Image (cartoon, rainbow, N blue to C red; front, top):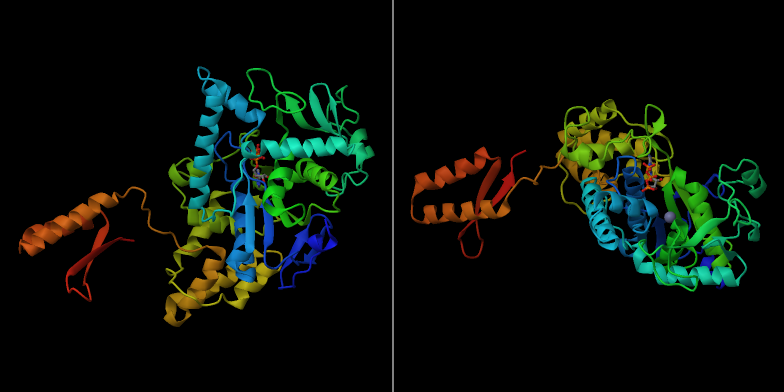
Length: 471
Ligand SMILES: Nc1ncnc2c1ncn2[C@@H]1O[C@H](COP(=O)(O)OP(=O)(O)OP(=O)(O)O)[C@@H](O)[C@H]1O
Ligand SMILES: [Zn+2]
């Protein structure tokens, strides 16, 4: 690869980001302003996502939106993967569908979980990424990368596995700032006899006849988790790209190992120029996690009354998440959500606008995504706009940058076809001058919270009826 391909030759647009690689806040420059490239590790789809898992989705959605604002929507590529091969998925498939062939059970578990994930984060205002690769679509690329690592002396076969040889890479540990010998000394990793070094990690492992597997030069098997992201990011973003993100817990070993694989396979000095990590969402000082059992799923919060005895709109969850800066821990509590809800209660409905966001909202975001300061400024704008319609446009453009705003009406229980049919019947009644029936249909809809609005088609002069949900 030529130097030009990895050089940060883009211009400085005022954006500063804290880079885990250097532990410093740096001016952000893209490799290519025409295509700014972002990769974020997505979910392993074996169980519903909890509200802690939503944090990276929301934080990097704000970054995606900000980059689109700065560079133009068509000049940003965002990849967020789905991990659909993993032993946790196999275990779940066996548990939930013991009577089904394993591959069918796995397909069922991953589809159901991925569908739910999409539904959940859509309700939290998260845009779809440009690409959402699935690990199972990239097995061939993984086999190729593993073969290249073996060729170059960075990987070896032992005990039914292909392992990355951590001692073959002097800079191993550069992201997490762990020295290899420190890792050995304090190793919690079980020293397995077939490994050359205790920190060596799996690139490929053999599958039994019942386990999912793909053919490879090392036998029928399946990839390790880390190699998946190295291959999917290269496929969509190239050997070196701009920003790689995820939660704090991924720094070691996952991101350290991604870097080792990608750099050694490609002979590059970095995998991504900027590494960003969000802090944890916590409950009483502890990371919300599946293994701790201290979690609420996004779906539970949105659709059930299991947290605080009520449902929580996606708009409230999103704002609550962004009221804390992404690197700090968040204490997840009912009070926090109520605080967000109380702010939103004072915000007017935004309007469609081409206006630019207010500098007092944009500038904190440029400073390492200081969403808490941006939201404070936005709240002041919202309160102004509620009194002064002249401020509505700049308020709306600023709110759109963060995709935060007042709670939208819930359309989930509404049968649009039934409403259209009722409107049709009312129109017939009106044409037949059957006023009482027309009124009855309208009143019936009003009692369901549906308001009708009549207007005239400017060309034909015919009555046009539209509907909206009463707020
Ligand atoms: N409590 C949390 N706060 C913030 N981010 C989190 C939290 N828990 C998980 N994440 C992030 O969510 C993303 C998805 O991770 P993954 O599907 O591996 O969840 P997980 O870490 O297995 O969850 P758990 O810790 O509950 O087992 C990762 O970027 C991870 O860092
Ligand atoms: Zn990853």
